[in-house]
Image 1 (tube, rainbow, N blue to C red):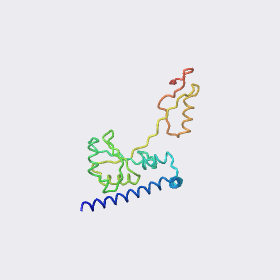
Image 2 (image 1 turned 120 degrees about the vertical axis):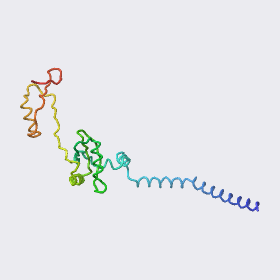
Image 3 (image 1 turned 90 degrees about the vertical axis):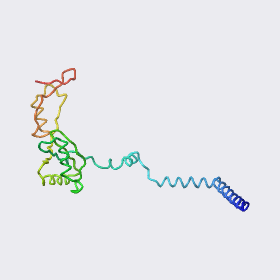
Length: 198
């Protein structure tokens, strides 16, 4: 029995050796190598060329493809009487269930004056949140944050320009809501340093 197994093993090894030798001779031939190179070139030409930015964009995911959204465009300020920010957060979580109401909330942040700021995913979600909270006005009071105009600082104004001329120019650019809170600044001659005109 052992000799029969040995003979079968020798035959199998002989067949394996001959097939390896045949494949090695075929691979070693120049035509086979050239055919492999040609097929590789054809495959590489069929692939679209990728730019650096397309490869990086895929690695970062969809974050780059979405336009940036301002956090304040869909925000709601929520306050409650006689509560600190932590208590307002707990009341909000107890009263509003975003999954049940199907409200998209991106971020919830505790802010000053015992309030929380809730950033919603869209305008519709903000309206849903406002109506949900206003339906039970027992504790929470929602408000939409007011937009503020940015403070504009104009530097390197020549000393011969009067404040009224500068304000007239600023009003024509921005609108009638502009007001002068601080004195206009000018440039000290020769130094290039700002100075406050009186």
